[in-house]
Length: 226
Image 1 (tube, rainbow, N blue to C red):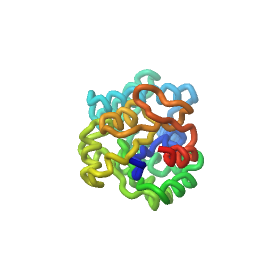
Image 2 (tube, rainbow, N blue to C red):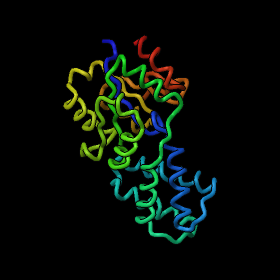
Image 3 (cartoon, one colour):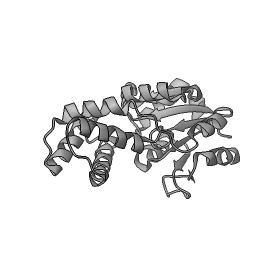
């Protein structure tokens, strides 16, 4: 059956989360009077990814993730700051960031002319709503599903079951999951029983990915061929 619906991740698939995160962290560290170097940014990214993977596996809650990543980071660098207060400052700045992956709007405009686009994200509800509202991209999204509101998360099958319960179970047979994360998006698509497309790679990574695109503008031709 031809593809009719796209389930799309948002961070590092449509929105450039890494640039937004680095900018927000730089401002937050400066406001706390703390140093923030490129080496520290690289370490934070690795630490943050580890905590997100723990969250995806169900090992920790998102509330623990938000605070513990900074507690561990500050301890490693001998920095004195309250992790919860720092996370709040980071979130304030993150919600104000407006950065996109290359050709985001052009690709969305082309795709939305032919397909339903459903956003599926594990991001923070307030931040995602603020960023989407201010992005100018909301017009291309038919629905936005945020894990905090769903009461479950990617890659859990329950998350996708709830999405299809909302949009119509008939869409499961004609949907594809598109995202940048193997553990969240690709595994999530597998758990949902739908094809997967990894963004940011020229070739799929077996066994989780059916397809791959290195650029968003590669999606229209790929989807047309399915």
